[in-house]
Image 1 (cartoon, chains in turn blue, red):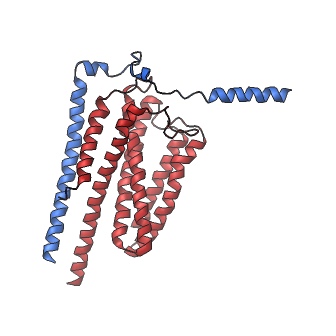
Image 2 (cartoon, rainbow over the protein chains, first blue to last red):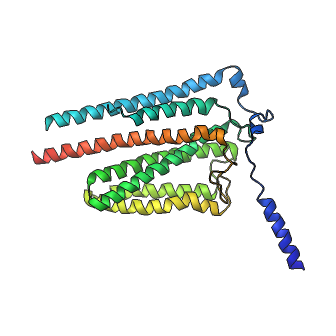
Image 3 (tube, rainbow over the protein chains, first blue to last red):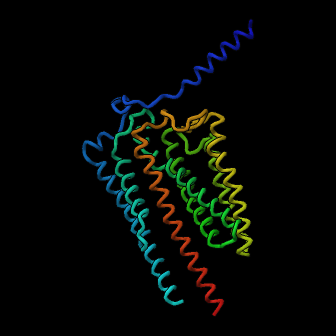
Length: 82
Length: 224
């Protein structure tokens, strides 16, 4: 009897344990109770931030493109030599 | 410059990742707040790392099959790029953890497995550089890379799922479920993964071309 009770309680607790994941729903997008960067949106500073990170990414990409060009030039020069 | 379509695609996808990743609507979740957007930058690092490691392993097998040093160049440089993404992934994850879990590092199964995986790949570089004969170096590191890959994938994708973890996407079978991501997040996440992986491929192929050119120059000098 004790064993049965123990097993049933264990199963109950296991099923409760499995419930700790919460699905993302459409309501989560409207939940104003959670603090987000709304101020940055309202005064437009989030766009400044996007611009700044955009410049960082753009700079890195320009650097990669230039490296690519340099290697292509070297490859051409080598092929002309040989 | 060889302006191939995939380099243009990489730039376009990264621009989209940045703009949509920072500005598009995200679910308002407690504790996470705006950091949910790190999904596009932290998680995509690891996905790109795995993609690039896979390319590295394919070229390692190719090297073992036909012994061309050009394949060893590809294997090494794609693994190098993957390690860079892994280091960025672990650093961004650590920062994210500080502000959501409260500590830079916890002894979580996922985190420790990721750290072990990275150490295995650091050992790959040390192993390579400790060998002087180029053919021996290429062969031994190709074999090591296959074993490291076979340990890395279970370490970060399977073992943390067998136990419970703080890290999302673990414990049970979380792959592609609705708990950690929804369709709106995926619309930025998958392009982000492809964009970062293409950027990694770009940088890796640049270094491969440099290596091949340097080898040709060296051979020419010897033959003169």
